[in-house]
Length: 121
Ligand code: HEC
Image 1 (cartoon, rainbow, N blue to C red):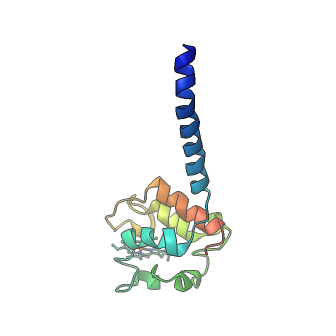
Image 2: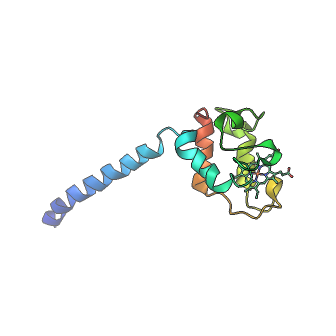
Image 3: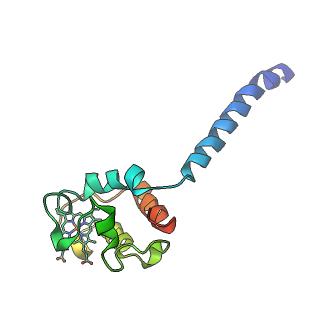
């Protein structure tokens, strides 16, 4: 028993270290260029990108996103219209009720919120 225990210890220690590393990675800073733009590209560019800009909104330019009143309020995800719209997206309600789309994943929604709360850089 003692032998097994001592053999397993390094394995447990290594996996604990790996778990805390990935936790640290989750906490790192979120930027438009690195993590956020790809989410928009996948889900939104078709109607709000280089070709079309429904409602005059385009998500391929950070400067343009920030130019819309209350769409994204840096540091305040709760006061940002984007989060409400993004939550309803694909649900058949809200602004996009006529749009057939796959909802954003919980991970993508968290990413958008974190990005805004970190200052929407
Ligand atoms: C298939 C086309 C389509 C896709 C894909 C799409 N939208 Fe839209 N979006 C629209 C249309 C159409 C409107 C205008 C709706 C209306 O006001 O009737 C709109 C409006 C908006 C508005 C303006 C809402 C307001 O308050 O005026 C925002 C913000 C928005 N979309 C965000 C997004 C985001 C974020 C995504 C991706 C997650 C997305 N859209 C994907 C078609 C689309």
